Length: 426
Image (tube, rainbow, N blue to C red; front, side, top):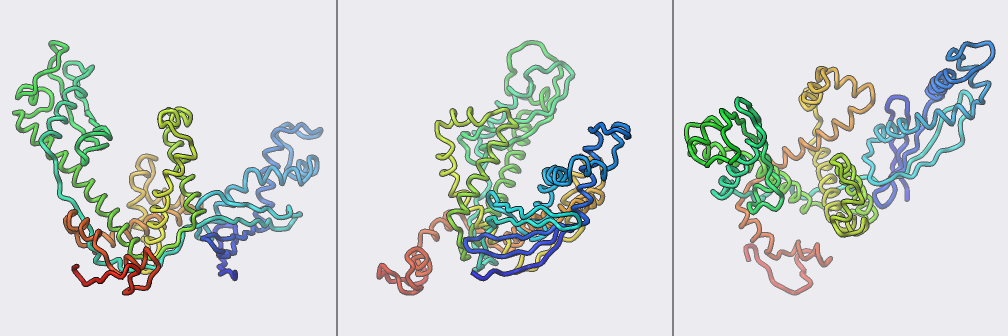
């Protein structure tokens, strides 16, 4: 299959991209000779700190002497161990490639002195989407709903969590996280925080949920005021959840209207990525892969298979958002980037502008811009979507249309394989 070529460069790496079948690409990369020699010199200088060579003080052996003594091939091999990962990342950035799955790296002949280094990467990439309707989509959006039972459970959780171990005069911000199996779907996994001050500790028993508790524990004049505050916080958390659900549903609606071919191999690769990400996250929480498998009662392969529907859905979403970015000419500005970096910059003790410059120097700014562009594409889809009741959306999704059956059976639109007749609204 004839490929489509693009010549691009990031920092010192030049790339040539060839598109392959099944959503794969081959990236041919070249690192210029001067960059190779610069990194070889760095490696030789590092090795020189460890060598004892007559006539030179320890740690002061010049790089040319190191190369002469241990051999250029040895120094080059050590250089590749440290530099190839960065050159690989630069090559993908230069090519504008978001890899899916493990790459196949082919390193050519090692370069002689004064020659560039060449290598190639073959890897899966995000599939392409042919957009259908994506503006003005009608998408179900539920209304906020915080049942009184949820408020009561929150008060109970607040009473138990906020006061445990506190001393008189102590103030604490208590966070209460609802379990994933909470009976209220809107509250599952949600976290609500309260500022609690203990005025006095007289006994270990938990206080009654009354006006005195509201005043002592949370600074309210009455239990009714505390209930109102709890309800307000829960409703705000629910509104945020509804916004997130709606935005996700809008992207899914745009994906349903688009044509996206997702090869099985790509789905498998993304499912493995999702598995690795989850295991990494669990590891930070002190849960090993073996422990998780015991808890789940399933094998790694079984769990990866179960992740495939989510993997395919994610790939479709990414493909559609990339197509919307291109169709709408979305390009995040420097102001957008600095705004997105504000929180990270504050935690690192630098300005957003300084952090952006640091990312630019490390050739990591473009991936951030692509991520921001995707977010802005979601903003655009949500802004132009029309919210309808969830019940109406579910009923509409059950309706039969020629387009739906054509997509499912391969029959031409207007010629249903079942022979059913259809009129708008039927």
